[in-house]
Length: 53
Image (cartoon, rainbow, N blue to C red; front, side):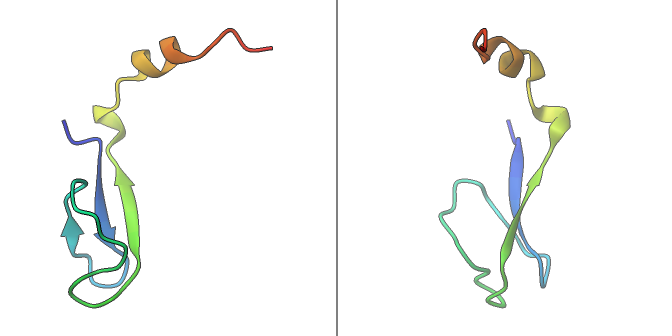
Protein backbone atom coordinates (compact mmCIF):
# COMPACT_ATOMS: atom_id res chain seq x y z
CA UNK A 1 0.00 0.00 0.00
CA UNK A 2 1.40 3.40 -0.97
CA UNK A 3 -0.01 6.07 1.36
CA UNK A 4 2.57 8.66 0.37
CA UNK A 5 5.63 9.33 -1.75
CA UNK A 6 8.53 11.75 -1.51
CA UNK A 7 8.95 14.31 -4.31
CA UNK A 8 11.56 17.01 -4.98
CA UNK A 9 10.00 20.48 -5.06
CA UNK A 10 12.60 21.71 -7.58
CA UNK A 11 12.89 19.00 -10.24
CA UNK A 12 9.98 16.67 -9.44
CA UNK A 13 12.12 13.56 -8.90
CA UNK A 14 10.29 10.93 -6.84
CA UNK A 15 11.71 8.70 -4.16
CA UNK A 16 10.34 5.65 -2.39
CA UNK A 17 9.05 6.07 1.14
CA UNK A 18 11.49 3.29 2.06
CA UNK A 19 14.49 5.41 1.00
CA UNK A 20 16.08 7.50 3.73
CA UNK A 21 16.70 10.79 1.92
CA UNK A 22 16.66 14.38 3.11
CA UNK A 23 17.48 16.23 -0.12
CA UNK A 24 17.12 15.33 -3.79
CA UNK A 25 19.97 13.20 -5.10
CA UNK A 26 19.55 14.68 -8.59
CA UNK A 27 19.46 18.44 -7.96
CA UNK A 28 19.93 18.94 -4.20
CA UNK A 29 16.42 20.40 -3.81
CA UNK A 30 14.15 20.06 -0.81
CA UNK A 31 11.75 17.14 -0.61
CA UNK A 32 8.00 17.26 -0.05
CA UNK A 33 5.67 14.51 1.12
CA UNK A 34 2.79 13.85 -1.29
CA UNK A 35 -0.05 12.02 0.45
CA UNK A 36 -2.49 9.77 -1.40
CA UNK A 37 -5.55 10.21 0.79
CA UNK A 38 -7.53 7.65 -1.23
CA UNK A 39 -5.17 4.98 0.14
CA UNK A 40 -5.51 6.01 3.81
CA UNK A 41 -7.81 3.83 5.92
CA UNK A 42 -9.87 6.54 7.65
CA UNK A 43 -11.70 3.97 9.76
CA UNK A 44 -8.43 2.86 11.31
CA UNK A 45 -7.59 6.45 12.25
CA UNK A 46 -11.01 7.17 13.75
CA UNK A 47 -11.01 3.94 15.74
CA UNK A 48 -7.50 4.60 17.07
CA UNK A 49 -8.55 7.85 18.74
CA UNK A 50 -9.10 7.74 22.46
CA UNK A 51 -12.19 9.02 24.20
CA UNK A 52 -10.61 12.44 24.64
CA UNK A 53 -11.15 14.82 27.50
